[in-house]
Length: 419
Image 1 (cartoon, rainbow, N blue to C red):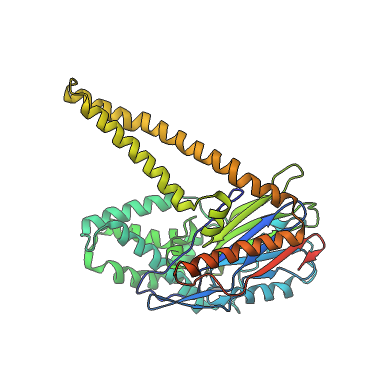
Image 2: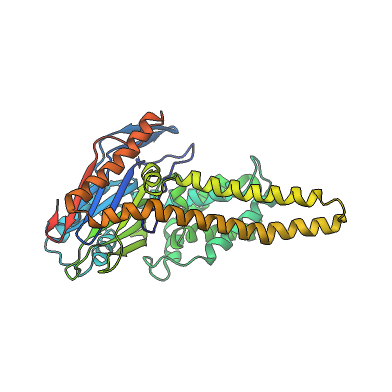
């Protein structure tokens, strides 16, 4: 998620996997020079044997401490390694009773760092379960990428090579100290061997493939890849407010999944601040498609479909024109078709997308953002709340699972505090 009016993503666990509670939700963050507004619904979705069970009991919006104007809003997994997020925020209140962060980013980083080394919250058995889920997600990704219902040993070995190369190219997450992979092997070697047998024993893999699987078992933790998001483990934590030295508000967002070997797997994946001459910010999170459609004038998925449809129409038209050029030899027709597809259609599709984006920006996003930029604190909170309620209304009238709904909480954060 990023930009001035965008952001979506939600996770759903695969069948047959034991999962914790999930939050299918709609949330909004809005900032202008005066304040930050956050709004979230209260629906919490739990998957029981692959079926969603929704309860409107979730708190997703908290003041980070009592004495600083900083809030945190969470979406995705309702828990971190078995602990509800409210527990972590409550603990943090006790750790930082007189916090005085200079910047909002410093507040977000301080909270994220506070999740490390907390044995009383995350005992060894809980951390091992978190690692097991990460390992299962990575091995499941290998099998799904191999293709087909029953891939053979050659296909699986080739996919192991490809997934290993994909992970090896990625950056290491800065939250893990040097040598952390060796610590993973030492602590969880037996679990790695057991999980490998469970997933791959029927393929009789050779030692080179098995060696790469063991490397994947550590890379899936230490690299900037959250494969466990596919089975619902990842939480988004969005921070908004003011540091002591900040005249205008700022925001930062973390991806956090599980605690492994004493370290919470996490990364800072989004940050922004309001500049004196800058624009306001409005970001929908999770299942906020209706809010995006309101802001952009078109549902994001429909926009993507329209662009793809236009490109397909261009390809079809070009092929038809070449086919009707009966005086051209077949090799020349083949050359023309290739040139049209690889050059002209790509160029035309890019122009189409550019013009579509300009129209959306000029006629839909900019007018809304002008209002947002001039809005007072209470009005910002009302806009955020209304956009979340709009998402819930859309799901209700469309007959979809009510994974967005319940009471909507809104917070307004100014330099004077969190309300």
